[in-house]
Every structure is written in C-alpha cells, then in structure tokens.
Image (tube, rainbow, N blue to C red):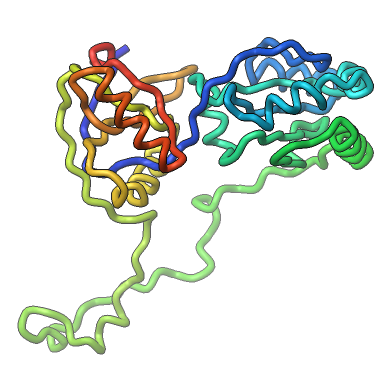
Length: 283
C-alpha cells in the first residue's frame, strides 16, 4: 500500500480528540467494533446505544459512578440494548465522531431496532433518563417500510432543457461582456472553488494530527474555515482504512516532540486537541 504525505496551504477543521480509559461499570459495553456491535443489535432486534467518551471528561466519569452503576439500567440494557462505548481519540473513534458530528462530551446516540438513528443525547443523563429514552424508542420502533428504489437523477429526463447561450459578438466591449449580457450566462455549478498548492513533504519531524476525514470535499470545506486561525503548515497523510481512503490532517512540522507538545497546548487553549505524530512513519 502506497502512503503519501502532502502539504496543503489550507488548514482543516477543528476536531475534538481526547483520550479514554476503560472503567468497570454495571452496564456492560460491547468489546467489538462499531459494525459488529450494530450488526448484533440488528440480528437480535435490539436497540443500539453508542456512548462517546474521553478520560478527562468529568461528566463522563460522573455517569460511570452513578448512571452506569444502576442495576435496573444494566438489566434493561442487557436484555434490550447492545451498548458500545467509543474512545474519541483512537482511529475509529475519530472517524465515527466526525461522521456523527460529535462536538461535546458525553454524547450518546440511540439507534432503533432497524438501525436508524432516532435519538441524540448530550450531557449528563441519569439512569432513569436513559431508561425513559430507551423505552420510548422501543415503543415507537416499527419495521422499516419497503421503499422502491428510484432511478438516480442522471437516469431521469431533465424537466427543462438546458439553455445554451450563444454569445452575440455585438455584446463584446473592450474585451468583455456588457453588464446587461451577464444575466444570460449559466449560473455557477459545483461544490466550491479552491486554490490549493500541493508539495511533497519530507517524512521528518513531528506534527499534531487534529482530524481524520473520509471525504476530500469535507477536508477542503473545513480547511477554508480553519485557515484564519493558524499559520502552521497543514499536512495531509493519505492512507486506507477498511478498504476506504482516509485523510489524516495535521498542523505544523516540528523538530522535536516537545515543540509539537507546546503547540498542542496552544491548541487546547482554543478548545482543540490533537495527537502528536512522528512524520517519519508517514512516508
């Protein structure tokens, strides 16, 4: 597998990345990955519950000592719910927290028995709160309706023909269109226009990884927003995960891990965290 490291002139978006340490609770969280846990819930017609967590989330630890120690909640989950806990700092956790736009901790997601996300909970929840939410979702869960696939837009006849405007040479003045003729020009299409400079980055030093994306479009969109915050080099490491291309985004090229750590502390002051990465392994 070929891995590439490039420099972009545009920095990426802020992504909250924090460490998580396992604790022992009455509520048992599945030890398998996201897909395996969700498939188990679908097969057993159970709800799927995901708790996004981090070790220095004080509210999360409070829930460990209270909510997740409740025996009634533990029994209900054991019978009706497949529960999973996601460490937002590890590789998969970054991907899932990005996909579901997790911006605060704790964030909890509840999927119904058909695998559809039906509830997002943020902040401290008591055992009775979660029991109420589970029972409410369980009550309204119904088999998904059969949907007849519709042809994609490209297979459908266009409702209106595209108007092709043939410029009138009489409308040119001083090498350009008269302002009155600009209304005849087709409207812009696409998802945005960006100026990007790409250079091969030597695999040396350290960087602070602040996000992992699966969409290059998202990288560019978020980079545009982040460009105003920091003047550090922005690196993108192209890799694969489970057969899909992913983009690891980093800020800065530092000579030592200590220098990278200093910059990471500056990021934390802006409520952004990251992982210090050795660029030598990203050739």
